Length: 539
Ligand code: NA7
Image 1: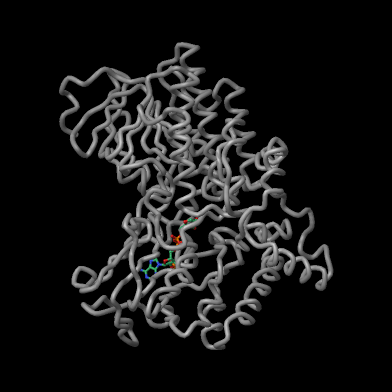
Image 2 (image 1 turned 30 degrees about the vertical axis):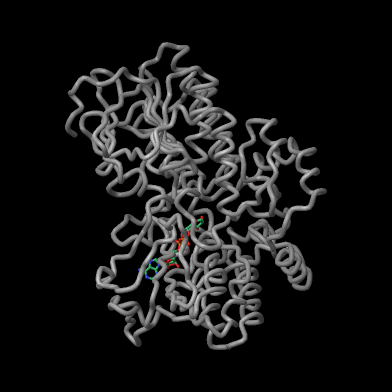
């Protein structure tokens, strides 16, 4: 790493990478609650993180809006009005921009500043951070708030560079939008993103061809405008809602049923699924408490959704391809949709099954599978992300004794609590691999992490401790705990899941998020802190 020996500007107390949900709140806590000299470095030209980049048609959060927000400020909760059950990308951007203004955060955020490298200078006990423009900044604490889904996975398909039309990845969407009118569009990928984008693109495209590699479950979102009564209810009862979010496994504002799927009769089970389908959303997963634990219980939910696909999609051959799903329900991140399966009843939408006939190459005029060529004007890659580890590993991070994070994680991520790593003193990762993160309603996980990090830094300063770093045994035990928690569920059974890194060729197959539940995880983190940061070497 060049330049780091040049005279640096005065060191800050803390540098935060990323100005999304996590970075904004972390800045507020360190700068305004602890009074530290803290700054945020952000690659985008605005705040918003994931939502700054993901502007694709239909981009909407799958968490319900009244729970997809910060809870640290009652005033903020009372003044902000969400318009729909699920917030659309522009509304989330308005919210985060409002937060940035309301808490006067912008003066401490450097936009258009992508971090290229970060090196721990042991002699000075400082992190030296280099931006892509070559600027070097130093700080005692480095906090990554880089998100879990911010490194776009554009598949390396031969011929893409010679495609004569336009192509886009949903996670790097042009700010001016894309006009599909009169165009033949190919959409690759049927994860949450492809499922959200399909009906919206179909509404204006001349023809939309959806290329499906792995069929996916989806449940209707049942999105709708929020009524004034509901909004009033939320504002009056937020303390109770927040308590539910903190006590539940996934940080959502609803509880998981106490019943197992086979506690009830088949008729009662069917009625429960029908009611959950009509209510819509991720809550479907909470219909029975054992859906992610017992394969037979899961199969009842899977069969219900597959029957719905066959009932909705009129062409039996298309329905069969859509319902030919190879993994347990919700073992991959379960999408929710607005008219996804219905879109295949439109004359201008067709489905290509890539399982038997994979994409061979992209020609100047379209996509060539092993069976046919599909002429296209625009290709949309809804092909996901190099999730969780990707955003951290694309920064050249070097810890103690020249240890590169890339090498430390060659066989998969290794952390303590998903928050810290051996060999990387005073570095904290918000929603890092090994934390519940993507298995939860993210703002709840983010607030928990930021609060923990803030308390930890306050403790270090109060005690005159210069360095914190997890011990090897603590990190080894945590890796075991992450593996144990995943193995206790059906989650690792989806072999194509990005939770496992399976969507990125060559990525180690390791179940990355912590599946032990957010409430349990919160207790573990609190306990570590209460025991004087047990598992850490403090010096
Ligand atoms: P996902 O969930 O990773 O979905 C990506 C989709 O793209 C999935 O269907 C993949 O099939 C498909 N894909 C990936 N690479 C290829 C290639 N090379 N050829 C064909 N198809 C491919 O990403 P999303 O953006 O939808 O969602 C990410 C998260 O954002 C979501 O879970 C929410 O948490 C928010 P595969 O299943 O790998 O066979």
